[in-house]
Length: 87
Image (tube, rainbow, N blue to C red; front, side, top):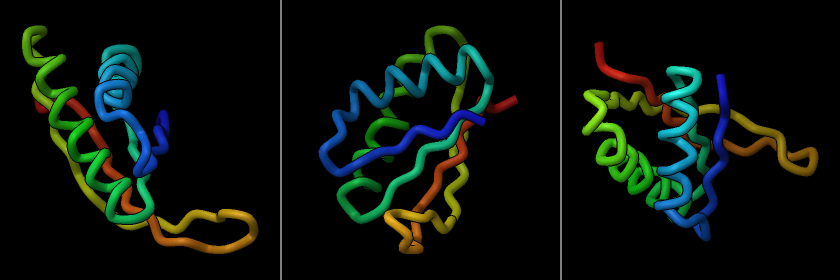
């Protein structure tokens, strides 16, 4: 599954475009965000991507979960959003 990493400085429109592209190509994607600002940008990107995909008849579903990631040898907790089309 494609993993898109989102930072608090990420442009939600660009993330949404990447997310829509991955959904069209692979059918499923995962966004990872660490921190409140990054989670905010990720949620905005998912909402924008829904708008990009809706004209094609694709309605997105998002499942949030916790995950642990290694950054510079340190374990951090991240929020992951598994995004896929509703069937």
